[in-house]
Length: 248
Image (tube, rainbow, N blue to C red; front, side, top):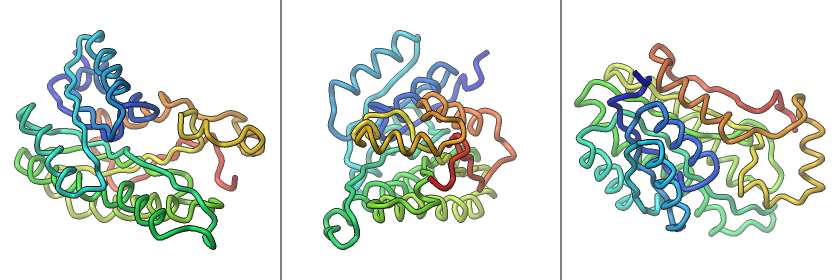
């Protein structure tokens, strides 16, 4: 029997990159997976097709997680479609980089709204379903850049650092209901988002990572699977998947 047979999961921002890998791995372990995405219909359909090939069950849910009503409605739809919701992975995130003297209010607000507020909207919507069944596994995908200084990413770093703090408090408050809440903090990972970084800067970053390479999305997904499948006595914790890099 697969480790997550009979479980249902919702992964936000799962049409590509880390989110896609998490959704695929959850499905391969037997979970029914709701895949949230913001805009790329074609990419989302590709994820569903891949999960279908595995013999899995995938529900596509398009929603802007920066919109509180849309985010909460999306979570409710996933839970009602499957009859219960066991796993929530808050992965959705955007970047709008700029040095602080030039960062606009819009750049700041947009990133905080999706990355941090979206995490709250989805978590708060999932809590009633999880408390009712006395079981839940919530994993928030933060970032190494929520732990260290990241030039040009004051908004992104604040959002990801906020997720780490949010996780600790949520874990403390929800433990009594059988809900664990943990964080996975990836380092630099080979995704479409990171591909936009100029090659020269990528080379500088890589030279300062002890394992001398960037992470693969599947390596982040493995940490998530560990927490939701085997981490019954782990809550309020943070797993760093960054190749040993802390001062890049």
